Amino acid sequence: MSAWTRRSKAMTGAEWIQTRFGRATGANLAHLSVVLFAVVNVIGLLAYAFKGIGKFAVVMLPGASPARPRDSSAMRTSMPSSSWG
Image (cartoon, rainbow, N blue to C red; front, side, top):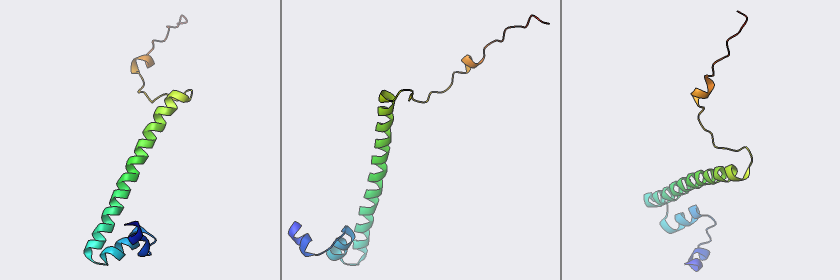
């Protein structure tokens, strides 16, 4: 198959699809499926990378703790009563 691909003199996947399937509806659908797969793959890999970077940062970087909601009971401290009045 590599020899056939090389002989087609197509430089990109889009050119190869056009050489193989022509300019018909099937060629456009084949190209669209390749593009959709690539977009979904890139989004998934970026999400996976950010998840991994977050786990790495928590372990390796000082002070990089995961965000936690504040405890509202810790904020309600009673103020000492004033003896002035």
